[in-house]
Length: 331
Picture 1 (spheres, rainbow, N blue to C red):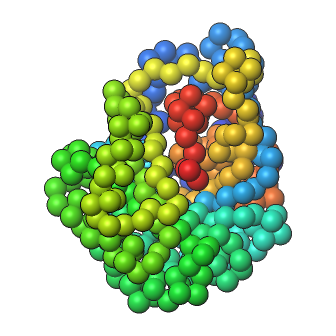
Picture 2: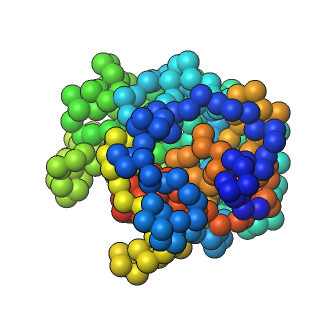
């Protein structure tokens, strides 16, 4: 099902309004207020780019926006008090896993918030692993994760080849990391990273590519850190572009694919969807993108079957993160 904002903001009547993230606040949208106003044409009247779902490779499960941290530039504004997206339960997730199996989905990704704030996190991981999915968990590797040490060790013993833990480490420099995540967060994150490594978990690390810093230099910094720590980041280092919501970005037109030499099939929304449950909602919904859980125009339906329609790239994040940034949450 494809939602058309021309006929109303959403076709899902059970989705309640939520407090807008600053990334959706009109005062913090692109500098040109005419941009990103129509899902079909740009401010210049050109045909807006759209992306079809080629195949469902990754189903993201947002376990809730609550987090033990309140990072300065968190695109979803996770914090110890933000429950705009509430905890999903094992029963709710199992229904989507049933659908994902039928659609031959390869991977289940768990994100938040901090996923391990959700009491059903480990049972949800087990359910996905038992069904044969690859599982990717995004975590800050701090106290919420460490509450489940015994259960995680057992999961890794049984399914380690299909389980990847991606730890957020904003920069290889402690001061820069803590400027984003707060005092005292570095040592706890490093301790969690080492705990995972020492117990043989398949590891990935997610960082930020800061403006003005070369990717080569930053990757070299992480490599030195990993060598110093004696850890092997088997599944690689993912560097995400900085998400500056106040920076103006161009709208993406149909012609841009050829101009930029980029394929629509390379976009996240060509191969992934995310399940969220908004505070006050009766049911969870499927949204087009991990970056846009609050914007009603990207709600695709209540089931995966309803969420197979095309996505209009009518948001600054589509340009900033995906098309021009070349990034993907799957790495």
